[in-house]
Length: 345
Image (tube, rainbow, N blue to C red; front, side, top):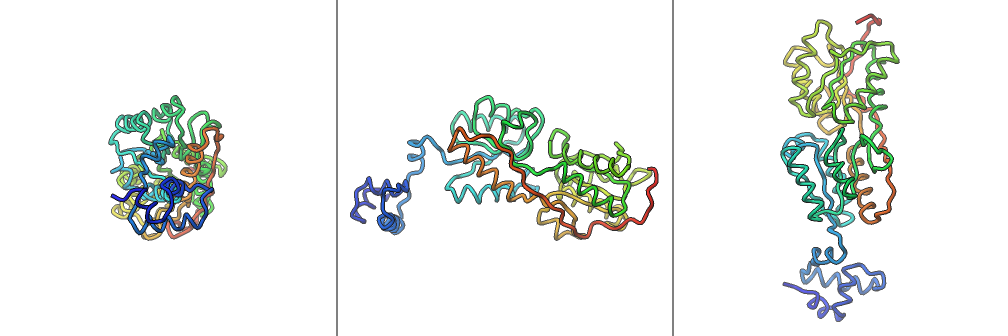
């Protein structure tokens, strides 16, 4: 195995100089750095990162915690895309990523405990925000660096988080349906203990109330952020005596399930029911009809969360911050104009 001494001998410098080049010490001249790095590459030398990190009391690794088991969460294109955003930053800053793999909430919690107590990671990104979350409370109690993608349920000014304005987005996408003449509008959301669901639903309700449209419990369904969840939600809506003419779906993958179930039931989109969604994952553009959806810039959510966490791991005094990623509506083919006058539901 090639050692530092081999590199030093090949370049005519001392082993300590090679070590300083590896650490990118500013006192070493650019010419010496180029020479040593060229020799390292030619000899096939790789620094012992673990040993260096042990000295620096850093793992150069961040933990990323999914809201559910990896096999379920990664079915949703949102998560591979946000991981791509995180990875773009960790790669450029020479950090590694450790992804949670627990199958249940209890297993995920135990895994986070191992990450923290074993010092396997320098900090943690939570890819969700839910009410009374054990993981978040554990990280706070242990004063361990973490960042939330979403909105904390409490102590919002004390926890660094990266989010969209989901209430505003929910209001805007619902108003888009209203502006196209829709009066009977349903909402299909994820779990009610997730703030992303609560905020998008609140925006949906605000838009209806401002348009003097009734908010009906029968028009609100909650299910999993999966294609199967969308299919299940549709069954109860199309069974109603007065079906909605428009549906706000809180996730693109759920929308695919809604689309397929409506098609199987002989309901045409957008002629019979118009559909709008959130996230703007790649599938939303290639499905037929292509989905009108809120582009929340998933990649940027991931990149900004990674930057914020690494800043916190480097500087323990880094103040908490709220980073809001802008959104926009991607208008496509899943909405039609409804030529009707407003009437009581």
